[in-house]
Length: 125
Image (cartoon, rainbow, N blue to C red):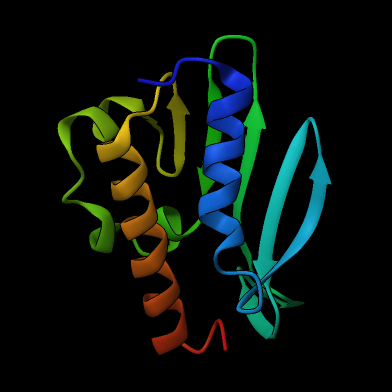
């Protein structure tokens, strides 16, 4: 089980980096890592060049994993494990206090599903 905030941050970023190409890195700083889409898409009432997708923000005791697809498509992400559900605060923010192999796998599957859902909706290439 991983409890070190720096390693949790790296693991979450690695999950997102697997999709670079479909996603682009918008911010890559120690305080924030953010990925967006690569094509013009609606975000709220605006058309943006790359819809916001996710951020990884380390804090003192956890890592915040902001996952916009859980906000835009909440019904697609209702079958989360008990542990991942405990981490969820609000509609799209997860306060990740630890990781294990099962959680890393589940987060990876959640990101994969979001990529597929956004592609179907024309939000990603």
